[in-house]
Length: 141
Image (cartoon, rainbow, N blue to C red):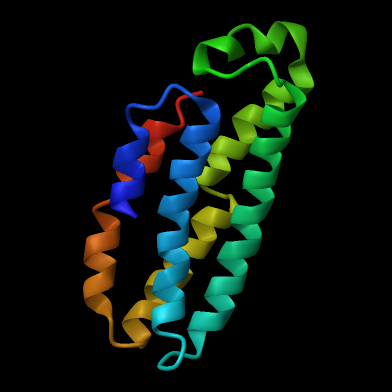
């Protein structure tokens, strides 16, 4: 989770930035999967987080697909003036990917952490909480 977030810091390509974000988010899903046999909360938290992440990621990639010439972060400057609807989606979806309240990703992470504690893997929580600032820093757009 942390490595995916750290790898995204130096990216200026929007597609690569979203790809490294995906690596980071898959880490949370793997936590739930790792304790699936030991916690009744694991499957519920995995499916909830997966659905919330899929919705926000789909929205972000939809904007990227709608603007095929915009390859770098700088290419999105002035988007609110020219395409305000796409700009709104590009504000809401990264906030969801970061996990800001009250988005589904925000609600899904504590569920996964709870499943890890319930499944006897509390040490995972301490290592994953260290990576929490990474998404905030990699989604400045």
